[in-house]
Length: 175
Image: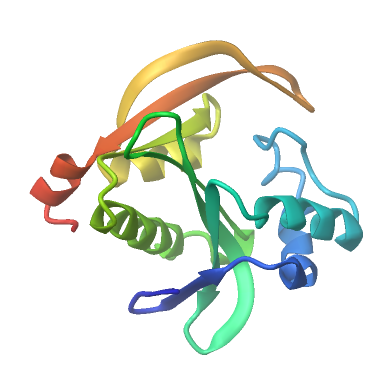
């Protein structure tokens, strides 16, 4: 579990499906997800079972201090290279514009670098302005453009890879 001034990040569980259904059913919010919006709570439950499955990925549900209802999550998946983690995040529309995503993602990055990760990267759709803005504000740098990288509900999509190294995070005083 991770704690910040306003948030508590705990393991994501299938039981979060009801709380997260409105977010995962939101067509605009899910536009850049490979699968698109999820129609039912059962669909969300199945999706969360995969997201929270044991393996090389850890997923933290974002909750407000004193309220255990999930409003999003941050995930970290170990990449092929030693000490490299891919990070992903999503936040319910109701929580936008309050710095919650930045606070939650920062806490996970702190944890990953404290555990000895040397690099964190993120993969963002080229049209996902909100995610790109957050990554850049956190100090991630654009490293490459991958054309026609993902087959999604929208068709083939381009992808931007953003990277952040531990020494840059520490030099910026974020660690």
